[in-house]
Length: 290
Image 1 (tube, rainbow, N blue to C red):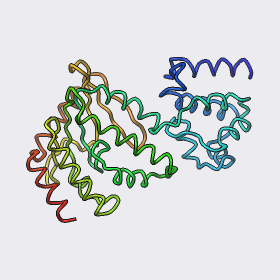
Image 2 (image 1 turned 45 degrees about the horizontal axis):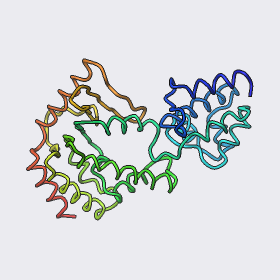
Image 3 (image 1 turned 90 degrees about the vertical axis):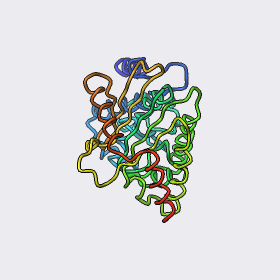
Image 4 (image 1 turned 30 degrees about the vertical axis):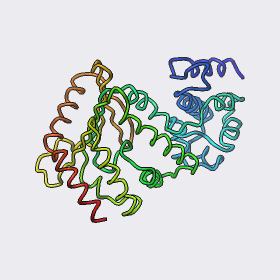
């Protein structure tokens, strides 16, 4: 490797890039690899589309690897390392990227969720991950474009199901959902898959630390028109976070006044939605018709 390459490798391995030393790569390894890949690709003057042609990947898949959202597989790394003149740097760092069951950008959220004393989510498109059954989750992942590999999809399903332990964690985590009706009626995976998931939601809703509310479709005012979001409160309510995920990015809100605005917005959503009892009746009616 050249001296520049050595210095760059040291930079992406440092704590500044989020890579934990001595633990087989850690949560930030995929992001670090993506940064290094992008550096060499841009230095070589190679477009994402051209790299994709040589490796058998699409332009969007190359972009996802560079963002740390997907793990490079097959002979991608070997071809890219030679094509971009990385002199083994990409090969070396790729060995530290674990076969993670979640995208790198989502690992930060999972870390915060695992420590949360309160989780409050609003969803307007689909049943949220914490309430999904394995079959529904599989149908959701099958909608991905570009598609996931089968082993990636199954690993993500397994990880998603493991998150359900939060419902019975001690001390209890206070968990609330406000869900649009369409999220509970859109037949992702087919009628039987949806019905089974609705029955599961009714079971979860019976837990003392869980409240699930449905937003009626005939509201003339609506506090959630900007889209879905999740509020997290850490132990002792010492810290509050807002997680937002969209088409072009994912981010946390951690400062005022955005934090206060988001929590106030969620309070309005709860007031506008059906009560938990009315919501359970609605979900039961939908399931019965399927």
